[in-house]
Structures are given as C-alpha cells and as structure tokens.
Amino acid sequence: MRWLPSLVTVSLLSGCSLFATATDVQAAATSAPTNPRSPAFNLQDLVDPLTEARRQFERQHPSKPAPKQLQAMLDAPLIAQNPELRYGCEVTSLAMMLAHAGVKVEKMELFHRIRKDLDPLQVKPDGDVIAWGDPDDGFVGDMTGKRGRGYSVNAAPMQELAEQYLPERILNLSGTSFEAVLDQLRAGKPVVVWTTAHFHKPRKWDMWQHGREQIRGTREMHAVLLVGFDEKYVYMNDPLTRRQHQRADRQAFEQSWIALGRQALSYR
Image (cartoon, rainbow, N blue to C red; front, side, top):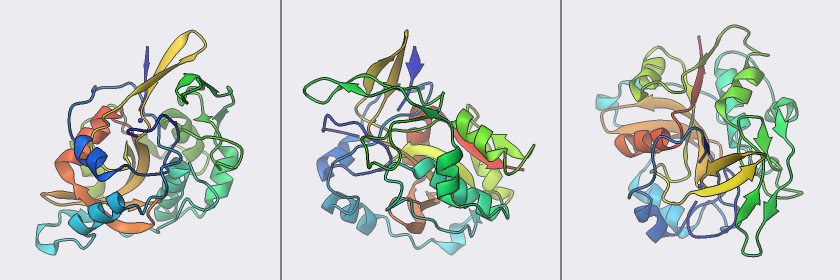
C-alpha cells in the first residue's frame, strides 16, 4: 500500500491551495494516522488562503521572531506560487532553496521540467477520488489549476529535478529525524519540507487506485521552505501566503511533517 497525504471537510481533492474553517484548524491537531509513506492532497475550492481561519491563525502566530531564543534564521528569497501555479508549492519552494544556493531558476522552468504522472482523475458523483496518479512517479494533476485539479509530487522526483541544477549536492533527508532537518538549518542550509496548510497533523485521509496500488493522501498537504527555528517555533517561507519567516508551533509542525511521510530536501 502506498501512503500519501489531505484538507478537511470538503470532498474535493487538490494541492497547496486553500484553508479550512476555524473548527477544522482546531480539529486538525487531533488524531490522524501516522507514518504514511508519502504526502498527499491539498484542498481545492475552499475560497482563498486568506479566510477568517487563516487570518485568525496569523493573528495568533505573528511572523516576528523572538531574537533571544533563535537558534537559526536564514534569509532566503521569497517566491509566490500564485497566480501561475495554484498547486505548485513544491516546485516554488524548490526555486527558493536553489536561489539560496546561488542558482537562479524560475519556478515556471521547474514546473515544465518536473516529472509528471499523467493518469487521469476519476471521481465519484460526490467528488471523492476513485483513481489518480502516484506522487512518487511525478506531479499528479494540473499544477496550474487551469485545466483541472492538482495534487502533489513527492521527494524523489523533486530530488531528481534539483540535481539537474546542483549535481551531487542535493541532500534527501526523507525518513530521517526532525533533528536532522534542524541540523541543516544550523549549518546554514534551508530545507524544503512537506507539511499541511495549517501546520498540524491532517485529520482526514483519502484513498484511490493507481494501477494495482492504493494511494493514501490528504487534502491538507502543503510544502514550504523551512528557514529557521527556536525553542518554540519553526520559521518558513510560505509560497502560498507569500509570507517570509512565517512562524508555526515547532512541536505541531514536526507532527505534521511526520504524518506526511518525513519528506525533506536540502543541499550540501
């Protein structure tokens, strides 16, 4: 069985796109299956990232750091995934990481060069997915959102793409400990990580067929560039909200990362 990552109470599947209600944000910290093999879904048509739930989250978690507690904080360029790549949080986060490494590459170039799984989306009348692609094979769905729903791509195709720009320097931290991720920040290297749109464990999971395999995914999937941390918070460049040094609770963020398969990419 393949394990993949999801967003909340709507039966539409999508990637790196929207946010849940305030109730969903609180509920997302409750139980959800852990140790999935890979990440999963984002939500598609839930209005906009800047819903009341997102505004409430940002009021409660201002991005200003607490300098006395900081253990690492990196300055990486901030790049927005929208409007061109509605579901392009992964390649946009990678563009930020490469820029920090001194490689200037447009997110649209990465969009064109990333491997894609072109298996068509099949859904039930209620919108639940019956069959779709495998993010281990490439990006699933339409990353632009112009021709249909988009989903996600996992670390292996992203590593393959990144190595075209930094040969023999890409470090795949997937499957390691969160402390290993933080060590990269201590060493001055930002990390692309798979999390959720609200930085808590996903509450809802979906399953669909891919050939003879079953893929497990969540509509809450998101990817960001981790750039710093202190005793209580982690800090990120979020390609969806376009916020630099956006902070989130460190413990909750770690649990979301574990739930989505411990996927992370950085460079030497």
